[in-house]
Image 1 (cartoon, rainbow, N blue to C red):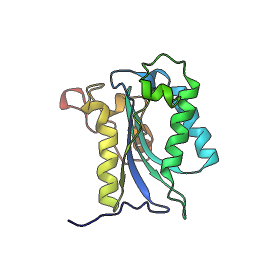
Image 2 (cartoon, rainbow, N blue to C red; image 1 turned 90 degrees about the horizontal axis):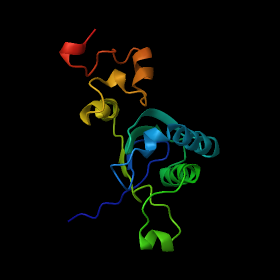
Image 3 (cartoon, rainbow, N blue to C red; image 1 turned 180 degrees about the vertical axis):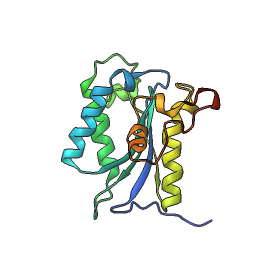
Length: 171
């Protein structure tokens, strides 16, 4: 079996899924301002472009493009997660192991990342991000979810307001 080495690509674009440890909590949307501030703070320290994003109550998906000669998305995620955790009141369940490491029990330790290969791959992940609130039953059409870059893409003419809407609710 081949030994594949996962390598980060400087200046590359990536799709991420980042989730709460307790998936039934609504911390991300209930504390959306704290999450936005965490992103803003980290982006000033370690720049990156958010190409697309959707924030759901218990997880988020996004597409980032890193600066040339920079492939360190892991540090950025660590800083975002830490800033968010510091900004919200404690109250989550703590495992003994997390207590010993003095970690909050908010985020799953890991995240899913995928290096974008080409424009078709980018477009497929863009659609996945923007359809996610519909997929999870939070809204009937992508345009109704407030915590999404979908609205920016509509303004840019890349989506219509009716994209991913059932026929019975299209304008």
